[in-house]
Image 1 (cartoon, rainbow, N blue to C red):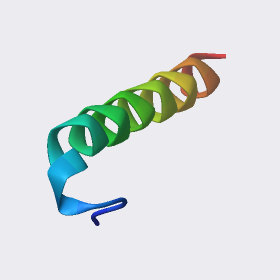
Image 2: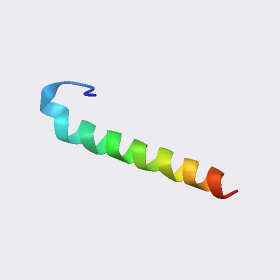
Image 3: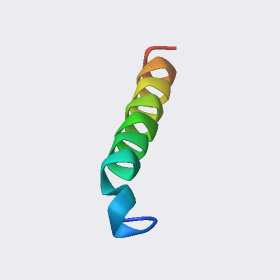
Image 4: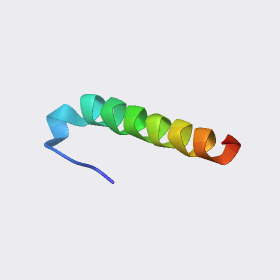
Length: 33
């Protein structure tokens, strides 16, 4: 899913990837708890 203008694609992809990584990390911590 794309967010923001096309000329911001790289920054948006990095932002989304970072958000997904943080979400996965939180889910992983919850699973171990």
